[in-house]
Length: 135
Ligand code: 9YT
Image (tube, rainbow, N blue to C red; front, side, top):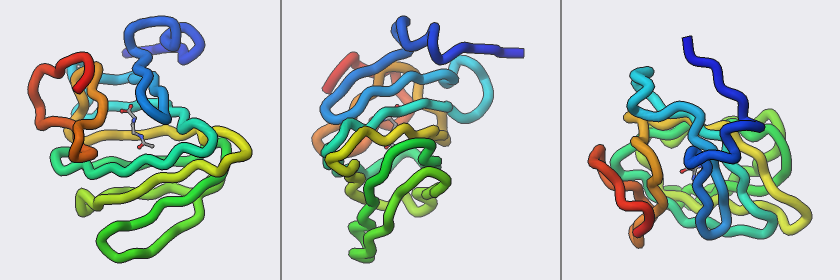
């Protein structure tokens, strides 16, 4: 069994900070679960263009409000606590947090990320390889 405490792990190398977000990767590839599990904070007012070509991702909003724009269809969906989105088609998207405060999200990636990935210039994480600390 694996038991981890966010309040402790936030102080370790599991925490990754990048432009507009920070994340604590509570489960990674080397935990052997077949997915990774992250608690991610999207900073207030952040606008993040992403395209996970190599990963499927599901996200559940626990705190805060914002929106997600599907760049394939042009649809924009409101995000608030209790809303989940799944990028089941590797959908390119823009995630926006409202200016009033951050969004707190629980995120699952399949295949799992391995460690310190941050988004490349194309908004993706690389396919399953050992990652540089930043790109
Ligand atoms: C909400 C969202 O896009 N989360 C992505 C996960 C986070 N950026 C991370 O841990 O890499």
